[in-house]
Length: 301
Ligand SMILES: NC(=O)c1ccc[n+]([C@@H]2O[C@H](COP(=O)([O-])OP(=O)(O)OC[C@H]3O[C@@H](n4cnc5c(N)ncnc54)[C@H](OP(=O)(O)O)[C@@H]3O)[C@@H](O)[C@H]2O)c1
Image (cartoon, rainbow, N blue to C red; front, top):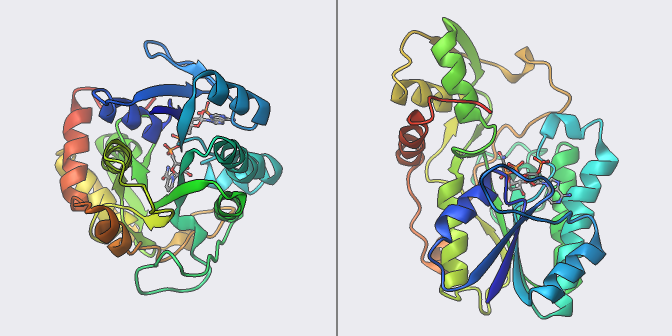
C-alpha cells in the first residue's frame, strides 16, 4: 500500500519517518516547508486539487494527517486560517480518500474537551466542549471527516512532545538549566504523550492492517495522569537540572488569550481493546525522550 504522510516535518510527522523505515508499505512524506537533510515532497493540504493530484499520481490508498495549526494561543486571533487548516484541510483529505476508497488516519486533540469541569477520563463518545478556537476547529475537522463517508481512524492525543520541533519538554529542559526559580501551573491536569509512542501505534495499525472494520475515534496518550507542574518536575529531575526551584502556581497567574482544559485526561480503553495496544507509562517515555535529546545538547530549535 502507498501511504502519504502530511506535516511530515512536525513532531509526529518526524516520528512517522523513524518508525516506518522498514515498512513493507511505501511511505511518501510531505509538508509545506523543506528541512535540510530529509526528503520532503511539497504538499499544501489546504489545496484540494494538489491533494487529488498527488494521490492519483502515486496511487495513494492511505493518508496519515500530521499537519495542523497547533499554536493554541495564536489561533484566538487567527481563527479563519486556523479553521482552514484544522477543519477544511482534513475535509479535503477525507473527500479525496473517499474518492479512491482509501483510509484517512487523522490526529486530533484533548482540546475538543474542556469547557465542562470533568473529573473522570474523557471517553470517545463524550460530547465535545472546546474552550477555544484551536479545539473548536479541531472538532469541526473530526466532524467533516466523519460526514465525508471515507474510511477513517481519528486519534485524539494530548500534550505531545518529541525530540523534534518545539514542545514543553525542550522548553523546560532549557529553562530549568538556566533559571534559579520557575512557576508552573498545577491546576491543569492531563497526560503527556511521547510522539514516538503514538507514531508506533499508527504504524502498527497500518502495517498489520488492523484498521479493517474499525472506523472510529480513538484516544491515545501515555499512561498515568499529572499536572504541568509534575511534568516539569520530572523533566528537571531526569535532566539532573537540580539548581532550579520549581513551584506550583495557578493558571490565572499567566496571561493567556484562551482558557485551557483543567482536566483533559483521555480514557484509552477503546484503543487498547480494539488494537491490542500496550501503552508506556508517561515517566518511562519521558525518560527515553530525554535520553535521546541529551545527545543533542538540549537544543530548542
Ligand atoms: N502539539 C501538541 O501538544 C498536540 C496535542 C494534542 C494533539 N496534537 C495534534 O497532533 C497532530 C500533530 O501535532 P504536532 O505537534 O506534530 O504538529 P507540528 O509539530 O506543529 O507539525 C505540523 C506540521 O504541519 C505543517 N503544516 C502547516 N501548514 C500546512 C499545510 N497547509 N499543509 C501541509 N502541512 C502543513 C507544519 O509546517 P510549519 O511548521 O512550516 O507550519 C508542520 O511541519 C496535530 O493534529 C495536532 O493538532 C498536538
